[in-house]
Amino acid sequence: MNHPFDAFTYRDGVLHAGDVPVTEIADAAGTPTFVYSADAIRSSYRRIERAFAPIGAKLHYAVKASSNINILRLLREQGAGMDVVSGGELERAWLAGTPMEEIVFAGVGKTRAEQKAALDGRWSPLKDAAERLGGRNIEDRGPVGLFNVESESELEVLAEVAAELGVVARVCIRVNPDVDARTHEYTTTGKEENKFGVAVARVPVLFEAFKDNPSIEVTGLHVHIGSPVRETEPFESAVRVLLELIYRLEGAGHVVKVLDLGGGWPMNYSDGESPDIEDFAEVLVPLLETRAKNGLQIVLEPGRSIMANAGVLLTRVHHVKEGRRKRFVICDAGMHTLIRPAFYRAFHFVWPVRVEAGHVPPSAMEDLELPDLHPSDVVGPICETGDFLARERNLPKVQRGDLVAVFSAGAYGMSMSSNYNDHPRCAEVLVDGGRSVLINKRQEQATLLETEVSPREL
Ligand code: LLP
Image (tube, rainbow, N blue to C red; front, side):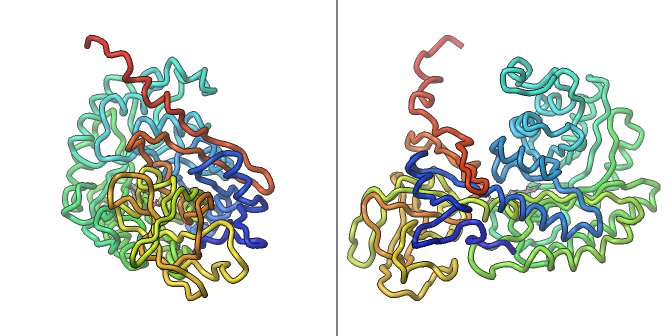
């Protein structure tokens, strides 16, 4: 699968994004900054598309992975639809030029207001701002292509809202297949004890209950078992459960037109961590081929597998502190910038941006055997012990002012960042060949205070 060094490579001892030395980006944009490679985004998108081409899978990019509107536009150019999980993501996807029919709206807690905006642009929270933000006519944008519905309760409310607005909501039922994705417990979503989806036995009941409802068209099934899934077997089990369920639904006279397999597709944070996307396709395509040939539309919702290795986080070292057993490298990025190490104990390869000849990393592994490395914790400025980017790593010596790169940070980095400890959210830069553009300005300190400075009566 794609690799942390695909788009970011060391040339003459300096990390480059495509043809651009990232030192230039840090000088111009400051730090911390997320840097994305347009080439890497395009090529991983195409690779997934190609792997599943034999079953004509339609890709809906999971906006939550990295939601910058310029990234959404880039993926639109590749032909991506969008998978959104909130009213906010819905508006981004639409502003990026996605036709409503190509948006799937998932999420376990959709509100009435979000459902309304997804069915009729006149209810969009951007109604008054759309034009200013460069959006098309919002009034007649129509309903989203698909709602991935998570519960009976949600379906009941959606039916009411759609009836009120006089439109039909097209729906896939998210199935909880009770399959263990064998990934981090916080991102395991397909087990019976997880809050997601409808139990297999309950799905036919929902199809039956809504089959004559004039405001709802139950058109298919959705599943998402976890993220990232590092083995093919859980996907295979989930697909088998779903195929069996389709068979049963058809037996009861229902028609299933769409099968959305969700996200969780593989990527490598370190070398050789996952099988390739082609290995997943090799297992799944034969299972789905006949169905797809007979008209079943297969949908995938990749996020991480497109974005993670297309981004690095640049951070500057502000202090170095020698501990008794290890060195603390104190940077301007931390858990407020990239929460994954703190939250999931996730591994990100971390390395200085400028290195001597002997220190060009041969691979993105935890324990590199190179001369003159020192056990180091790379930490942020936040007042928590959990605020680290990397712990107990052997790293080359760095000094105050040096730049450090956190690799594989393109997914769930910026989108999960926060203002904790009152730090402004950081900048984002997109590199395309030799050109780099600022696609998100660093937040200004004043912005953080604006909503608080003048209290008013409720
Ligand atoms: N579809 C659904 C319904 C999802 O819940 C998700 C991710 C995706 C698609 C995209 O999955 P992906 O292709 O990116 O694996 N913050 C965590 C990951 C949370 C994933 C949540 N759902 C992390 O940083 O690892």
